[in-house]
Length: 494
Image 1: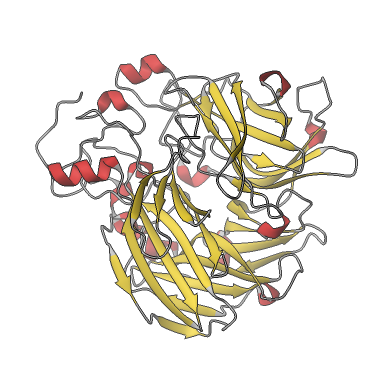
Image 2 (image 1 turned 120 degrees about the vertical axis):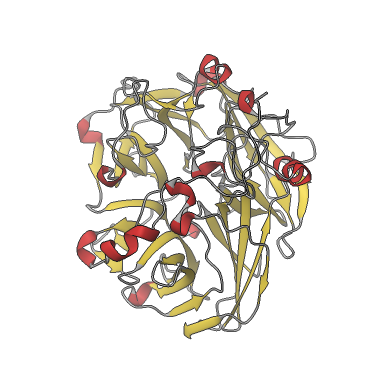
């Protein structure tokens, strides 16, 4: 256990705790929020999102922003009005630190640096999904925490009535739009530094349908994954873990420029440990998956963000090298794989860049998940749009990628449409809301939390996908919400 320094009431003088990234520490409710424009009456549901938001100053001076406590926001849109609710996930960490009135957790995913021993060491701060009547607050180092979707009360650690076989649970489960099945996995599934992957399918009523144990070719991060009608795809990021480094007080993750980008492919149903094939792509950083599907030839088509350099620059390589944040570029990339092939090295002709801007946080119309998709929505950075960087730079804070616009890519026509929220704004991850009564893919609305650096406040921007360049409605929030990670739209009918 770590030797604790004196309690600090202020946060470290580091970019990840300054400007817009200053921790919020807010729980509460706000009703009848100010709206500019009009929210269509047909929209009836809640946008849930989570941000890492440390409640106490860490005793690790350069603690990454990924290590904050999970704070869940719920934005309800109904009858043309908007309301807001926010509560922390009552993890073991949060509860015990409130009792001690100080930080007790040490380095990111390194239990050997903690001040106390935790039974479940997680911040539940990466994603929040709705499943079988509950919200599940997710971080890929532990089981979910369940929450009430209306009150945001934490119901407790959720192991699916004892069915969960893995010590870990993905932050990016996938949902079958036809059956409601949730498809999941955990990596480092038998504990820190282990190469084990546990794959499982869960029926809409919470019953486990199948469990498969696999061994990864390298102990590394698998942040997102892809599912098609018949296959599962595991993109392994070359951020590697070494248990001896952890025990010595080092970082959980270290960039490995020598490690390939491995892509595991196996059957979605009826797989065994021997079913998986590990394809190899030259070293790069795989980000979030937009979608995957099987084409008419039975090939797997995976649309995923790819950067040639280490996007998680705060975890450098063994020599301390990492790219400058302003040089990092990611683009939506299509990788086509033959699941029957015995040739496992991915060739250049199997890889195609789909768009030109620096992009991430890809979303589709989820009703078309696992099948061929036409429309992709995402965050983008285009300096030519006119962002006033000199004026907002002092308030940006640090530790995360910056995007100044939303884009819509039509894969059939190749056309890209851009939504630019303003010269003093940056966007967070969008969510797609289908238009009521429409079955056409991509017909609906895009909703995203937006940082306004002129007012140092947060806004919700709503865009009609049929008129993508214009603001349909803007909800002005009474507080500033630091940059979050992921979230999802839940229709009231669910």
